Length: 118
Image (cartoon, rainbow, N blue to C red; front, side, top):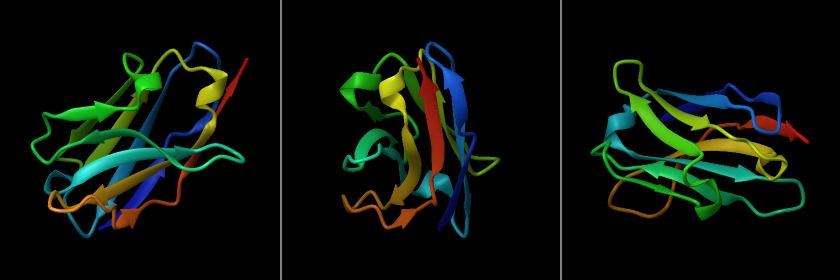
């Protein structure tokens, strides 16, 4: 499955952005879909995931209550709604997919930059 992210940009602290991840060559409902981010000088970190059922989610503690992962099967897209953004949320955000039988994400997008100004 090929993944392409969009929706990044520059936003002031307290603002919102919605990232989109468009899949091709596979259906998002067949995979565990995840969002990751990498800030300058830091390692890539997990942000959120959505299981195949589309019901179970998991989040990085620092984004719980602010970020929401969801998907639209008809559009074959996964979203990351980000509210109450903070400067520490600044990073390149990546969409990724994996089979439910493995913990290794095998497909990654190219990333989209999110910059939160204070």
